[in-house]
Image (tube, rainbow, N blue to C red; front, top):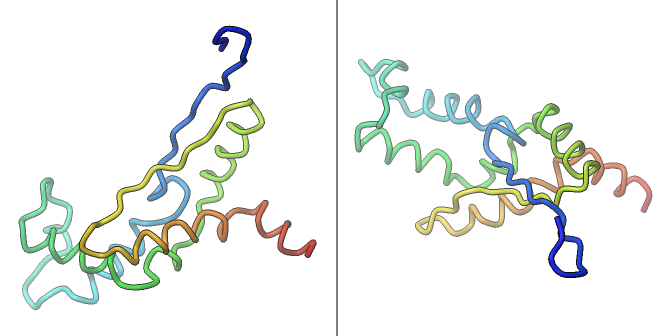
Length: 125
């Protein structure tokens, strides 16, 4: 893409949860730990979630370390690499809860920590 004499790279937006990392399995495991007697896992798939389950989901995802502990999705990082190699300027998108500001730090730390390229860079030091 051109803007005057400057070449502007196309932009790609990639989601953090369930694209670059395995969020849903960790969330399901966290919800299972706090599920009350008589509640069913299927209740947690209703859209939109009932207010009490939405609050529970937010609490699970706000636990310190929840995001840092997520497994990277190989396919997501392969996509990230392909986009960068194709010349895209990549931006990782994610929501950050205002009621749990520490989650921002976990999310910012997750991408470089999970990136295969970052592991190689760390090994070179």
